[in-house]
Length: 389
Ligand code: CAA
Image (cartoon, rainbow, N blue to C red; front, top):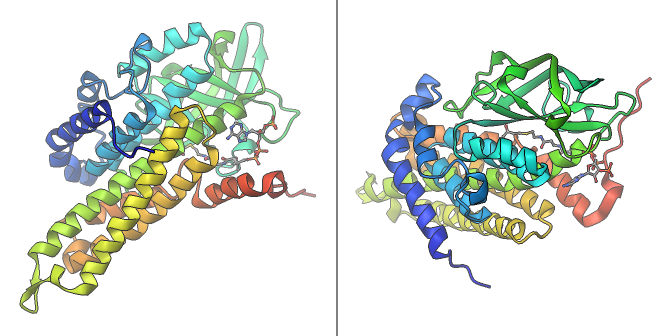
């Protein structure tokens, strides 16, 4: 067992940190306040190869491993978690499923523009009536002579109003309820209409949109993986995506810890630095320990995925722990700063708002526990739908 990052992984981590400190940190507060998606940032990330860092070079990517990608997300999220989620959904929820499930034609056609950052990607699974119960989605793809006509709506789609390529799920077999009978399609921006921009508690530099599809015509070349077998694409994609959200939570918690530690060495009360009081020392010790634990879980899950080993439960554990840790420890960072932590003078209140979503998207903490419990107990903990009269 070797816990050292490789020279390549360290170089990618440092490159991302430098970019984040120069281009993101000075702007993150104003992007948050103005709810502004920083369109100008993504070409800069693309120039450094960070929009497809773990995509093979032959498809326009950086050719690095999955752990390198996790390091990129951690560093970006340490600066601005909105940027972190934009890159996460673009990469692990859009580019990687096309790479994993696509035909050679689909991979060479759709992946290079995504990996080179010429287009943003979005993952359209969730609907108003289908969140945790992803298998209950109602968007339909009706067969046509040369493909399908897709009709329905999608909700809370990260990058929805900026994306050029969508990985979208629709029901191809209306007779089958639940997870069977769902197919996965690769769509363009022209296929969808943005109906609403969401206002959120945090992640204000990212976009979250509702979409409508009105008999969007797609050819057979847009079907990703087998017809009626798209739910597997969704689940396998989320297995990897959840490791990315764990990295995002980790980056947010690290940022909060950095501010809290520095404040504890400067702020004086009762004639001493507050870091000289054991109450503050123990908070910092707990923060450092929990951040370390989350990092180890996250890097292990990334390593398992890179090695081609099962990582469903390990990714769920990493996301569950890292996200709950980030919510707890960003709150503790505010506590260490006291009154000023609750103001906009320091970024810890933004970290606290941003951390909360990591317990919700790409599967709530409750769904992560369900996935972990199934890995322990098997199918008997499967959710059986309630029969309605
Ligand atoms: N990999 C591959 N296939 C899998 C799988 C996995 N990890 N997990 C399940 N499957 C397959 C099953 O084998 C089964 O296939 P068969 O029918 O052929 O046997 C099929 O998928 C259905 O599985 P289940 O019966 O277990 O499905 P379920 O209806 O009980 O649901 C669930 C399982 C885990 C609760 C799932 O619905 C789920 O993950 N829900 C959460 C949804 C979610 O995470 N949404 C996130 C939205 S995207 C987002 O948030 C992006 C963003 O903006 C950041």
